[in-house]
Amino acid sequence: MKIINTIIKIILSIILIMPVFGVLGIFPEPTADMYNNIDAYAFIKVLMDSQYIMIMMSVVFLISLACLWTKRVALASLLLLPISLNIVGFHAFIDGGLLTGGAVMGNVLLLINIYLLWQSCDQIKPLLQPKA
Image 1 (cartoon, rainbow, N blue to C red):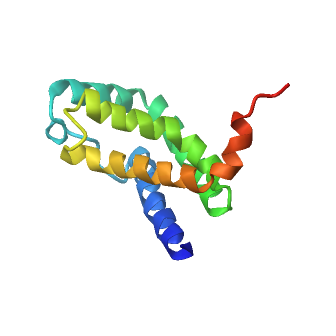
Image 2 (cartoon, rainbow, N blue to C red):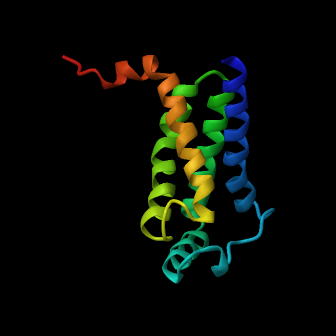
């Protein structure tokens, strides 16, 4: 089980570092042919042009990476959950479906996130308990 968790952490780390490289200009900007419709490209173009969301997302990804490798997996998973849900939601509702080529990385991110949340369920349960 420890080997599987390490492999999952490595895959997640690779997925999380890619947007950071994109913000730094190492990867090229997305083009219209990467998306299934013009609305999806227009949405991404606005996010890329404003840079605010991309920079904030990269900061959250870097913090999550640090948490992931310093044995704070529950915190990393909770930080990544809203972003991974939004990525999957974007592909499901704007880009044309969850089975498109562009959605694969988001789907993998969400599945890994759900797996890590499940693995750290005991640490997350106290957060869900009502306080008196």
